[in-house]
Length: 255
Image 1 (cartoon, one colour):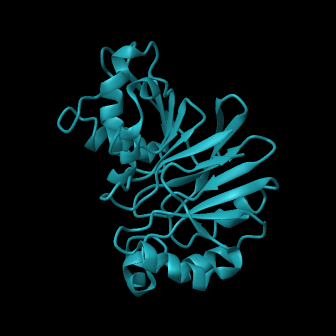
Image 2 (cartoon, helix red, strand yellow):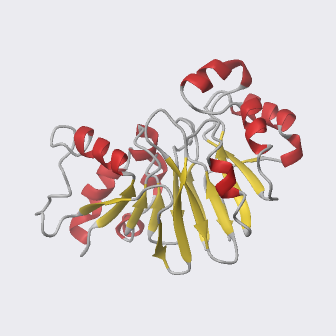
């Protein structure tokens, strides 16, 4: 299975794209600005979208995705998220004021988009050979991370989160863990901002990684533009034992 990084930045500019991953050919994980780099043909093949939460850098391209390819498809785009997340989307995005409600277009019987409640602990198989499971996350809005399991190997994505003692016992039970993609949004001097916004900074990340009981490749996502080099330097100092690497746009993780 291939996990292709479409976007992994905490902002835009200079070629940076916000969070989105393509799992196989038919499944998106979040819908940040990186989705816009896919061709129309690739977009039309997306059958499933798993959202971590509703912040704009993770959902920005969802309205345009549905609008662009809805008429080309013979089945709805299935959008998986917690019920709280789906309620926010319906109230504040697909509300006929910001964007049309594509769960009712062209009609309720055959819509271009369908919401699927997907709570922590739920699992499904959107692509042949891979199971997706929702994991606990702590953020300023309802949020989850995800576990992708092929049977042979697993990749875990933390989503946007802060210090979270409910996350690590679940991850430590994954015997075939190959890679962990985990956020670090701010440098250490902005720890107060990281705590207030429920993100991580390097010394908080080091404390979280100390709870990991399995060997895995560690990839850092959600770095803020303008602080990338400093934050990665601090991560290298604070979490050196885990040999973390910066996730990059276009990177492919095979598992």
